[in-house]
Image (cartoon, rainbow, N blue to C red; front, side):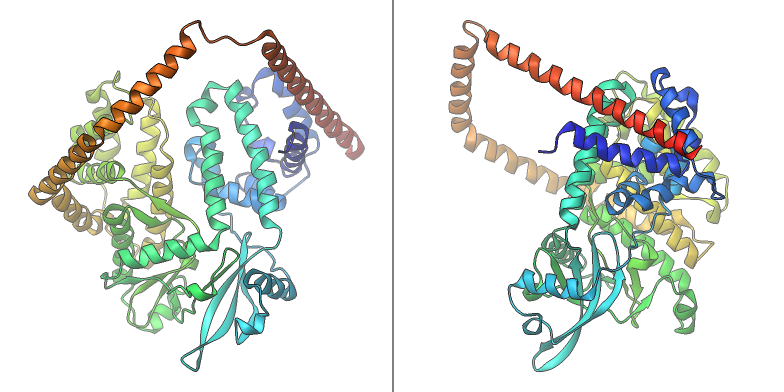
Length: 523
């Protein structure tokens, strides 16, 4: 376990880079607690002169700090409630592109992962064609039925797991202390934000899980005529290596080639939007990184998505919530849209449903007075989350990830068709889902599921009662004379807490002194 001083050293280094890149220059001093303002002024002293725009300073600093911080920035781009809309827009520009690591290291990593020589796994293994913070991709060939076949091979960066573990530990340390000091940090649930990032990164660094996501998406979409995913080569996939079919298709970002091949661009835009909503509503499992670099169009006009490291999930309650919200705005039923928030438990019950409906109407009515190309569903959801903050709605990471992805998907769709009508495009998918799940067939299915749950509960009741009795007996033993801690235990707890506080304070003073020394050296 890494100690507090080690975390503080890492965070101090990050703070120095932020100061040098001018990140603290965009902080409002009046929003900073009074005890921290001298440190803010100190940080401004070591700010380097730059011609860069103020709204790009944070992304520049995160890029300099390396892969862990790039991932943190990309993740925070999905949390405008935490960093604010302006910084979230800056962070959306972060590109997960890094210099490739050497070919020899990649070949050695593949051989080590399979425990056999590279030549016994691949007929050929070419140089990297793309490189990111966690992995890079090579084109290779394998033999299938006596014929060579091209594949894409994704290889984990050597040593990346150790680096991420250390940095994520520092992030957790910072979030824990922030929540201890700030009610606003507790409302934003910063510890949960870091834990969500941790889980996301851990999944990204185990390529067997990405392969499983691809397999699940393939099953969900096997009957979809306009979308598919690459096939996984399970025999050549490990924790550190992912092998997929090589995609020969046109990048969705290459508008000129799409036009030259005769594709209907407005239709592609509609297909993209409907595909994303179908995955979110029908399947509750969606690709959460659908930027143009991860999307292709094959010669038959089908969309193909790649890079399934970041996926989003929505449970039945969240899907119902999303469908009813979209349907409420489409039909201008703001009262029902407000009621959904309360029924889902997202807005505390002490607030007024009518007042919340009024706030939602303030978002919806201006949209209905605009032309189709001026209506942004992603912006609507962004405004909705801002309003819910006024009503103490606690942030929902899965809905924020959906909102961030919708911003990207909508932007790609509008790049294909600037006059794309989001409401007309979304309405068939939303209507289909609501008819299926809220109509007579859906209600019968829900009733059947409810009866099955009752049956399982009744069947397990005897065991539940037995376990409950045992728990009550144990609690009675514990509490009969009161739960007592010995004086020695209390003394040890106090000693540990004092030692931790001394280390934290000492490390903070060391970092402050170091920054001050650097400032005077520069000046």
